[in-house]
Image (cartoon, rainbow, N blue to C red; front, side, top):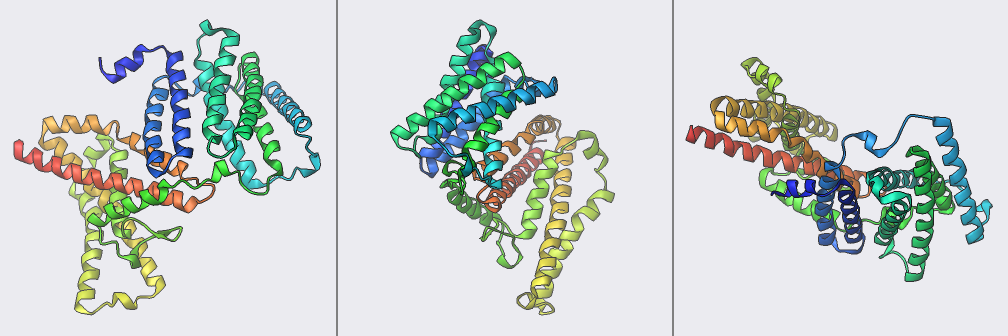
Length: 411
């Protein structure tokens, strides 16, 4: 029995519980560990996503329904405000301190909605009826409390942590009961968002648990930059910069390897077969080749002095390199894929099977970008996202060149 079959033999309810425990472990490692522990947590999260996705049949599984909207919105608002008023009495807060910060509102809204999707929508929805009403509420609340411990363990004192966990568990009980009675995620999601927005509304700066800069971002950037240097000269004058950091490849190589990634990501058998003609390949391959060799020859002969180019001229060259590189990478990939598929039946079958799952490579890229805290440093998140795609493009190009050579040798 392989891993997939073993996972499928576990009940959906237990898979959901395992996925939630895995999520808590991921968050604990992410917030308490060094850069290596954070990278391990990301790898573990991919496993959580695998278990999670294996139990999902579609978006309806999150129990977000377009039904009885006035009722759900009304219940969500009233319960959310009631929860906050109880908190005001407990903390003896003054309502005059409420002052909404747009960044904080956006951040806590996203986090609150995500928590509801996972705990009330997914986890509570996947617990079978055999658990019963009370058992469901207890399980979801216990795991939600564990999740809060994972988030705040390294950021709070023991007493403060205990207070947060108790308050969160009380709120979870209320939201879980609301979910069981309404049977629509919209109501508890609204209640949770209202609660979080109002609780954090007296803050003037973003909560530390949202903007804590992960240590692994710098380490990952350095490794990706070194890796890119193996395949690119990384000419700084024709490179993009994010958050003051040079991108991992020059503009031309960036275009080429992103083009490779896009071609494999958007593989469609019928379309690629139609494109297998010189009318597509020639205009797709030549512009970047002519530009690259033309500029280098002109520079070598002294006709063009790259060092004397203005900022505007360098910018034009940079964008042109990227545009033509995208075209070259895409066209070259179409040629490689068609050549392997048509020249070797055995390798062609393997290639088509592999390409069906290629799209899932976007998941770790998006995950890394999201975990790099786009709220505090969107440019760094963009750098990591596109650098990872370039990394995949390089690996794909190298792998397929090897497959192409092997297919020619053994046919």
